Image (cartoon, rainbow, N blue to C red; front, top):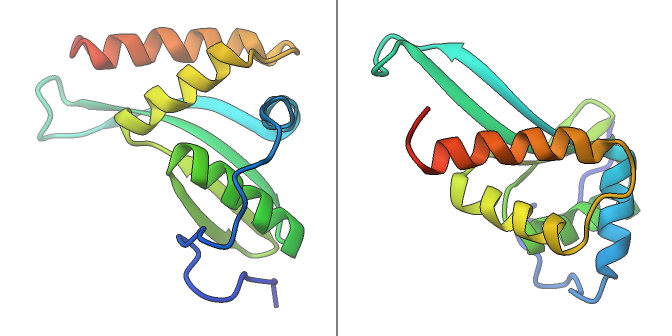
Length: 131
């Protein structure tokens, strides 16, 4: 059975917000993803829906759950458990703006910056309502 943090997974009152911002950047460089999905949706104006996401999925261990609670503290989002993995995901536009702002202040250091830049362009289109 996978380890799950006791209590409400959305509560971060016991989690310190003192984690180093560059650690968040480095961890995201290794295990984060900036992605989008396009779904066929009958009720939308053009028949399609665009979903933008920031995701980190790692092994479900007590330390990793606490780490993802730090991400949740910074960016909101949702923590979920899937088999032996724990996933943090942000999909709400106002929270994605926080993610972008953070990584513009503390830029990614690997080739993941290319995905991030494309992701930011899509976010700008979505914020302008042009999608």
